[in-house]
Length: 337
Image 1: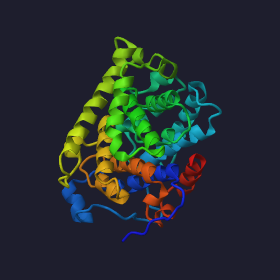
Image 2 (image 1 turned 45 degrees about the vertical axis):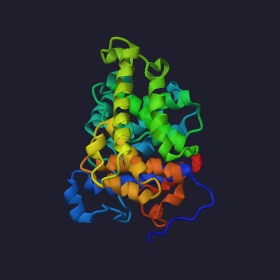
Image 3 (image 1 turned 30 degrees about the vertical axis):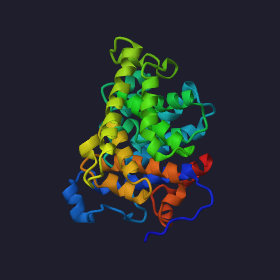
Image 4 (image 1 turned 180 degrees about the vertical axis):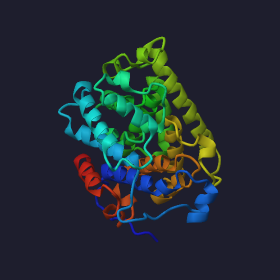
């Protein structure tokens, strides 16, 4: 039996941030393997133990930390205050010697443009809805801010690299899920609440945060632009509902909700892993890592969700000392717990 931390307080922010890193580390070596290859290497349950000291993570955790520190350093949660901090942290990541973990091409392309000191709306990749938009957004969901600010921050941090409306919408939904779980919402309630949020926000274009992004992207109107992103997220959530309506077949969740390379699929498939294993957080990570898709991102988001739901008690006691960037995860978690 795996020993877990006994903690009198949930420490949900820490649980979420560490959960993201743990899932990332477990999914790192399986990202480009088939399910059959993963099972041959790790057994039918998938990877369940951290490997290495430290256990290395990918750009998913690195960029989540970049977002977390940008928010930590912000004097105010406004576009004017936060955008330069996000830009600086992203650019520091782009040139770091530790940025050697198969980083996403969209992030690299956008950072190259951001380094030219042009407006982020001109630098972003408007055609990309890759999961880089929401793999790093967890720290936003741990802030004590109103929902409009939460949404604006989530979309802004996504928009700096991924200017596609689905990347923006999926990032906001990921953030909203973390917020709900941190505040005590049960995991099983998330699908309905996220779908309601998507329908409610479908025509809301946050011009104060996004500026003229819709025009740069060539959309006919702000509402047309953002609605297309919410509609794709609603389609992904409908596939999640369909999968949850039946019994768990134990197979690859990507067959039901997508491989997770794009934002709405990463959200839906991570949620499927978290919901199938709501009472066993390590199983949720292993299920995400045992996929034929973007295993590290799926497992990372699943970890962020179940960690926000259960807190640090979700995780084996020895893991927090062995994960890469443990000091930063501890500091940012303590600031939000």
